[in-house]
Length: 309
Image 1 (cartoon, rainbow, N blue to C red):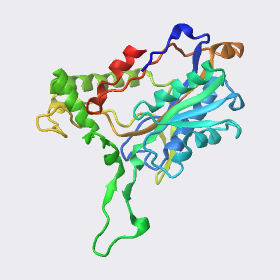
Image 2 (cartoon, helix red, strand yellow):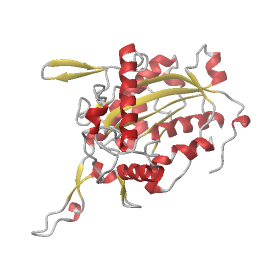
Image 3 (cartoon, rainbow, N blue to C red):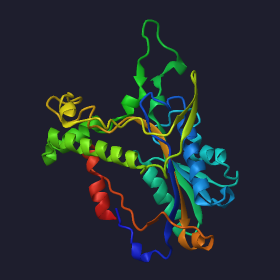
Image 4 (spheres, rainbow, N blue to C red):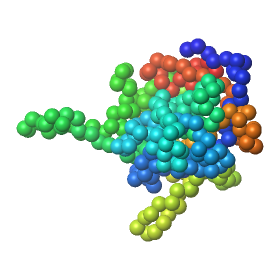
């Protein structure tokens, strides 16, 4: 892929707001909240934080991969409308798999650099818990005595049909190729858990988190903390978990990335436009990179992407 050239940019790209929901565990607190509505929680909070009026947003762009609810095909459009964005403001839903939320930010920057927008509401949202079990072919009926097969669409989608390789097996392939040991994987996972715990304890997530109130049989319940992390993990407990995808492999339930539900949203602006409104950037986007890699080694993608930046 051709590299972009940051020296040719004549505008600054400012991120003036960033909010996210807590991340719910598989079949956890958010199992009945669609990805669209999770996106709305994050989008409303980002707009409120930004100081940008909904009427000033020129485009809504959201990433969504699994499309697990009936309204998911309307993705970014419904998130925008439910967040108070005017009807005449266009919207775009993007899918670059695990990088879909990042891609929404890239698209937002491109809109601004091309002069098509001053302010963009963007982000990513997913509810993996709601991925349905599907039965294919019933629209045409089923033969007597030949019951159709039910497919777990979440499990099926986590296997790349082009190379017939589950995503976790691509991690096993990388471990074999680069000599990454089980202990390396467990140590990396443990450090991640410890960093989350330290950030949680110090209030490091407070400014970015939007609480969600749920109605339960026991009354209202406020979710303001990620569900998936296991900060009590130790190298000893991680070592006891068996490999899931390969005999003597490295990927376990303790060091694999989680299956979670949640959303995040940003307000991205032209720097001069934002400055004229007295806004302050949380961060500035100075470059990005994208690359394709061998599908059976999917997880190595960030390395060439960074080189392309």
